[in-house]
Image (cartoon, rainbow, N blue to C red; front, side):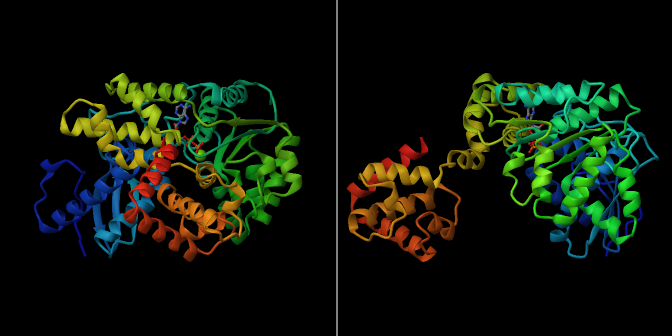
Length: 476
Ligand code: ADP
Ligand code: MG
């Protein structure tokens, strides 16, 4: 057990060089945790949130860290504390939890030169809680998620315009605003932007932003503590209620029920509601009909998958934000290659920039390929099993339905095996999942197919070439 009364340890401040062995141990553990976190969350987030943390004490299984502001404390607790504790635990099993507090005894440390976000961290005294909201009811807002930092393009212009409208309107323009789209396409960003805007222009209005998951937890907690009346009145007295990722409460009946009543109460009073989800209201499986029809009542705006132009625009904006000098060729390369979502795109850019800064070299396409090989491969490989079946059926001149059929004739069985093999190679699907897509076959059948094709490839160069050709067609 380490019992250092009070000392500072930041990841890279080696000048601290602690005196006793315990401090050395803690510093080493902290450095390891830091390195892993940096990998996981990216350089920008690391610099913003983790770097300013200082270790105070490690005692009785509790790591006590401090941060410069209340806002950072709330943010770190909400987003990183659990992960830090887990990572630390694998270094030192006795560590059970992490405690974050604000250091008041000193001037807040500024992030160092290097990667820094454009919007300055919110200063002391501001909690990221929404204006007028009771403490703890609303989740913290990310200071980077403002309208100014949102790049608008064809796929998101409608959602953006709708969000701006809600943020700027004196009267509720439509209710609810329902934003939906795939992962990492900017739903949360737009919601925070609405909240920031209202906070700035009409601070007297009460705005609550929270995830549907948090909403549910609060609700369950209120039931447990017999404070549901408080819960209801708190939520029913806000001016703007924003619930993120509402798909979470699909299938959770009593939470839906409560949400439905809150929703109606607010709409009746002319308060604004903003909802996000990963699907359209009607596609939300496990959602009650009456709730779906309520959700459909206002404006439903979807965010489409990004285009090349939008991705390029986002990269340019992000590079400017972190003041990184990235050659246009490299940005074009990234915009071409990382097509899955904006979060990955941003993460990729951050990694490339961080790498270049660390080793003190220019950013090149070669370096980018090297640093991002895992990410690039994952993006390359987004071929679907359906595409594979279609392509292979075409190639061997059989019907696509034969991919699912029970026919065992060699003329259809072999192509089917090839398709299974390619599905294993080119997608992240498991053997059982692949089996299901091939007419509900067993995973052992898939395994057998993979082995068979590998065997044939090694014996027959012509066959191997055929497979190679198919693979290239599917990947290209
Ligand atoms: P979602 O909530 O839809 O999963 P987020 O809003 O969390 O996605 O966005 C993921 C990341 O991508 C965030 O860092 C966000 O700032 C960024 N992002 C998404 N769309 C845009 C955009 N159009 N312009 C700038 N940044 C964007
Ligand atoms: Mg989100």
